[in-house]
Each structure stands twice: as structure tokens, then as C-alpha cells.
Image 1 (cartoon, rainbow, N blue to C red):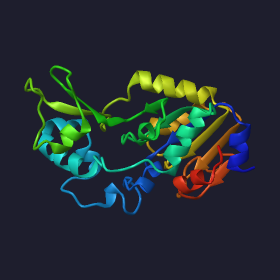
Image 2 (cartoon, one colour):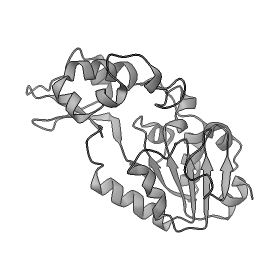
Image 3 (tube, one colour):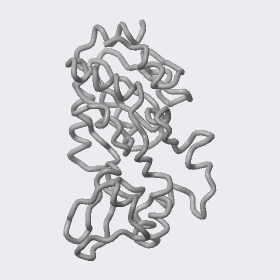
Image 4 (cartoon, rainbow, N blue to C red):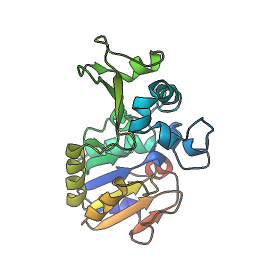
Amino acid sequence: MTLQELVDRSKRIVFFGGAGVSTESGIPDFRSEDGLYHMKYAYPPEIILSREFFYENTEEFYRFYRDKMLPLWAKPNAAHKKLAELEEKGKLTAVVTQNIDGLHQAAGSKNVYELHGSVHRNYCLRCGKFYSANFIAESKGVPHCSCGGLIKPDVVLYGEQLEERTVTHALTAIEEADLLIVAGTSLTVYPAAGFLEYFRGDHLVLINRGATPYDERCDLLIRENVGEVFSKLRV
């Protein structure tokens, strides 16, 4: 059975995506050969992007964050655009993403659950005032609010919990789906990787260049780039 056939016969599709969904937009992932884990910094990314590091080494955090986590130039690729079309047609009920780049919304998707937050939301820890990603990108050193408080990106750092409401909505969508398409993720980062255990639908599709723990459990395994796969899909 092909992806096209599964999409055609499904009525409640949920898409669960990771960093591999945005690599074709020019955003590097973490674990591939060219990913952030293989770049040379004074600290590894998982240390820099931790709650403890943010508060203890805020200036170094923001130096890395502006350099590697704010690709504001990136545009939605074929996968983002096709998913928005599927939602508009009433076929796709939700996008659950581990990405923080906002490209699904930029492509037109409305029902997006961002498990790890978004670079486009930044808040003062003292008064709660909102600041855009552009403000963070153009600021120098440690960004502070007009009230003097420290501004923090609304992204889930290592050592922080996922937002409970977002998790609840994402799990409900996955439980109610008849087709779950998982793409661009190694399925090794928890708790997000464990979300697949909640799927009770008819078919599980996995699109990823590398191996995952779910390869033997899916109904259709596709070893291609996510954007290339979706570019061939008819809506």
C-alpha cells in the first residue's frame, strides 16, 4: 500500500514531525553528520540548551541561540505546504511537532501542537511582556525587558517539562487519528517519542532517512527526504 492510497482513504490524519522536516528548509538537525552535535563549541548543545545553563551562563546561551537557533530566513518546504493543504481539505486534524521554528504555521497550518515551544515567542520572566524572535535576533548580549527583567525564549530547554496542555491536546489527536504519519525524527527523544504508544488507529507510516526503534512496527516505511515524499502527494 502506498502513502497516497493511505491518505486517500483516511479521514483523521495526524502528522508527527521532528527536525528532519525542516532540514530541507536549510535548518540543521541535531544528530546527523552535519547536525549541531557535531559542531565545535565550548560546550555541547545539550548543555547550552539546558535550563541550568540558561540561568548560570545566560550570555553564552544567547550567543549560541542567536547563532544556531534563530534561522528566521527559513521558508516552509514542500512538506509544510502539503500538510497545510491537507488540513484545509479536512483530511488532517493536527500537526504535532518537536520543532521550534514555526514553519508549519508559516505554511498555513492552524492546528499545530509545538511540544518544544517556539522561537517566535519570548517573554519577560518578571512581567510577562511578549517579545518577537526578531527582537531577540537584533538584541545584543543578554536581552532584557523594558521593566529590567530577563527575557526567556518560550522553548522547552533540557531539564524542563513539556507544557501539560500541549501534551494533552497532542495525545488526544494521536489517539483519535486513523492514520499517523511520523516523519523526520529518530524517535529517541523522550517523552515525545513515547507519544506513538497512544496511537490506536489503522495505519502507521514512518518517513525517515535513518533507522528508528519503530521501523518494525510501522505499516509503511519510507527512506526518503520528507519534503520529497510530500511533494509527490496529491491532495
